[in-house]
Amino acid sequence: MLLPRVLTQSLPLALIALVLLSAVNANSVDETTKKSTSHNQKTERLIFSPANLEFGTVDADAQKVQSVTMTNAGNSNITLLQAVASGTDFTLTGLHFPLTLASGESFTFSVVFAPRAPGESSGSISFISAIARVSNRILMTGRATEGKQLTASPPVMNFGIISLGSAGNQAGLLIVGGKPVTITSAISSDPQFMVSGLSFPFTIPAGGSKEFGVTFAPRTEGAAVVSLSFMDASGAAVLTETLNGGGETAHGHSVDLAWHASTSKNVIGYNIYRGIKPRGPYRKINSGLDKATCYTDSSVVNGTTYYYVSTAVNSHNRESAYSNLAEVKIP
Image (cartoon, rainbow, N blue to C red; front, side, top):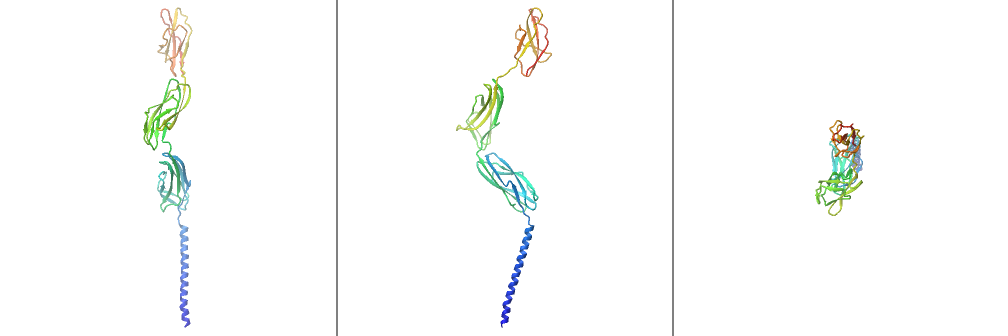
């Protein structure tokens, strides 16, 4: 009677051992499959240089650009289908999809930080490939300040050297940023420089511009560096532009002529003639008979060549033939 009980108890033990053995074998097969699958799996990974973008401080309505180089650090080709960027102040340029990078291959694109209002800005960029979202992403930060709402073109007006008694004129343009600007006056630190073309007060709308003029009429010799300030209703200068120029005394030219006295009888004076061609025609330039043997011509024009001749006149008002020709080139 004891034997049947022993056999009945042994059967479950054998079955349990068999089940356990089967479980162990199944686990071994799964682990082997996983290791084999893991060994052949493709990995997709991008490395960015720089790793993150810090734009620093930028004026609102201005922009700053930085370049980014991404490298395929995976073990197979990556075909990028889309770039996902967060942050409204950041835009990407230089990317065209689909973009395929071989293992180890690099590609450079640009990121533009163009803040629309003062404050802190942040964002990120990640890429989606033909398989999934690629690991790694680039973070972006920047800060926008109020910036200049009014600028001038050109930023500096240079009038050069102008003769006393003369004047020089230049045109300028006031340019407004993202907010309208009202100008109530324009003040020059030197009365030799005067603003024209503006009626105060006036308002330039956001993104608009307005032309103006500046006249430099020097009263004294020497160089001058002047500030031209455009003021708002509070009396504060919203823009200060630099003006410079110099005044000098005009140095006109003249021609001094001299000749030998005529040996003819009864000579009472001389006439002086001038032309702009060697063979004439000539025009008399002395208002009355010149009794001396010299004459100064002060009516010459810079950069012109003149030709002079003279004649002798006797007491019977008879005039001799032209003398020899004198050529003078005015600087």
